[in-house]
Image 1: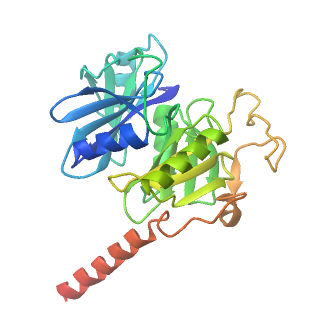
Image 2: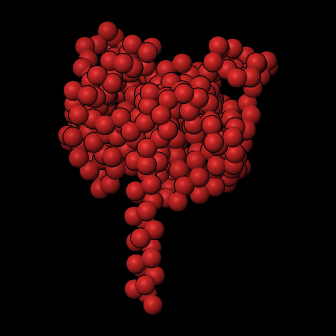
Image 3: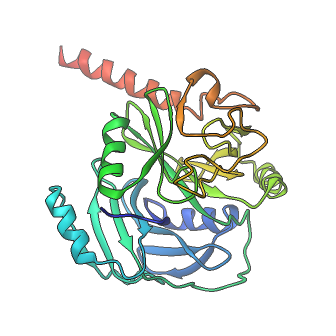
Length: 313
């Protein structure tokens, strides 16, 4: 079985490369490492490759990368994937700071890249904007969260941290409570991508920056149930939801099977479980606004479907 240890970087396609570079450097607070004609590479303030932007016709999440143990046998992993009916490729894409990658597609069409060799791209870098510590997790809307979760657990060795009833699953590959999430949705698309901040003062500074830039916070600050992270959400220039969070639960010993004890846990010890949908979203803080839930997006899809059906008649 393949065992990723942490999330690496995310690759997005964007129809407006310059606009997204401006967002990630001036608002997000990443540092531009390199710019080519049709792609750009951005790193965190401590020099870790965090986001790759590729020019494309639509805004979408293209690739997620995960680090595996040093010295991992890519040939053996490729054979394992082949036995599961999954085609993979060994690539050298000249991504800054990353060596060879083993690439394959997950059931929803996102490319997964596994790497074992990487290096820092810089240190103590000057940055503007928020300046997150790292890319933390990615949530995706799918038709069947259970099926996608089973793929990630069986093929990639992820473990289930929590469910919200049967419509939202949280998966981990390291100590963090979740690295990927899958939520039931009417349209298959990325729901949100999340970045870790240092503490509440860091989050407050982010809120002040949003106020100055007239960027709407469409949910938060709020403390969630699963993961217990404090979070705020906004939309970036490609209309994608971005989360900033702090204080995410950690499972530091898999054999013990519970998350690091914290004063805000309702259960002691806090173990993976199924949460009630009515209260799991926020232990404190405001309820999510329709814009966060993308209800306007879903309603537009329903109207379009009704119009198509009427035209067909």
